[in-house]
Image 1 (cartoon, rainbow, N blue to C red):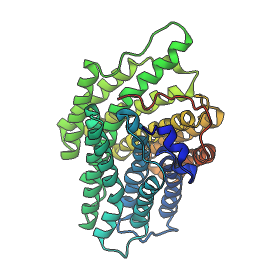
Image 2 (tube, helix red, strand yellow):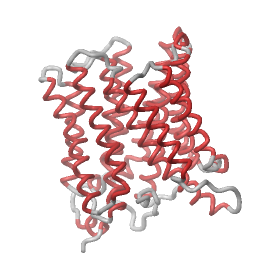
Image 3 (cartoon, one colour):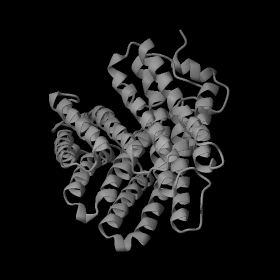
Image 4 (cartoon, rainbow, N blue to C red):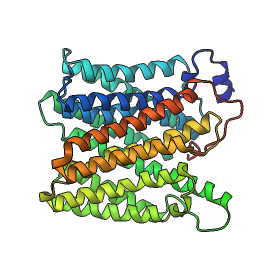
Length: 408
């Protein structure tokens, strides 16, 4: 039977198409930087896009269903073959899937003259195809444990469809479609992050000598924390202003802070490639607590700022952490973050801090939005510059095993 390595070696096309993480991680980073440049220009009043979406709707969609969809595709197309023992998608089929993602970005950004249904079909083509591919692989590999991943992907795609439906009806961007997508993203971070953060931390700490190690993943406490988070997110989607929503979000935030504390993150300060995972995960419960506070004290006007703890913070930092680690490991590099990579991480943290400050002190929002946007471009542009060459060239003869894809 042909192995993954043999399949990749026989490919004679661009190295970019030898594994799913390559085109989608690079495309995600370039798009994240470009979309932010466009958004800052739109805020300044110097640009108007021919999109079906209003400016705020386009901004939210570009990063949630544009950027994050690419990262999820890159992750799953690389991880699922290792979970199922089946061959990855390589070559032109991978290129075709990536082209569908690009077509979606063009349709949403420039398709104002097209029927709304045509824009939606173009944008949904990649996530729907991806879900079909992942479903086939999970069923063929009898990898039933990861049906939960497929369910979260399906919910994410459904949220995108609802987003388009709401936009076509003239409804505001802060609707069900946005909340469904954010909720699916938070569950992905909680479920997948709950596997990889303690695992990577343990692998790194056991090589550093005796001391406290992370609790094993997915114990009874983890399952309770995940169920409470799921309940909180479902209620937030359905009734985002309800008092009960605030209570459940606060409970979920507290439980996931405790969950994070069980993973010995305080011992990882000397390796940014590990501590950034803990920092990214921390923004999930902090966002939940921030949203709970915004609901309980509506006069504080914290809602949008707290929501960005999830969107820019948890999504941004966790995906950057995964993209850097996976790229290093799968291209034969040492699993350590150099100074330039640390700058990329800190730029993303600066984005979150500036965006949060803009919500707390709205009279300074103008220049704080510029700071947040500039730092965001620095983070993702920095990733593209640093890691783009690794993603574009063939893998080293002996690659380092990341462990990222072994969680079946």
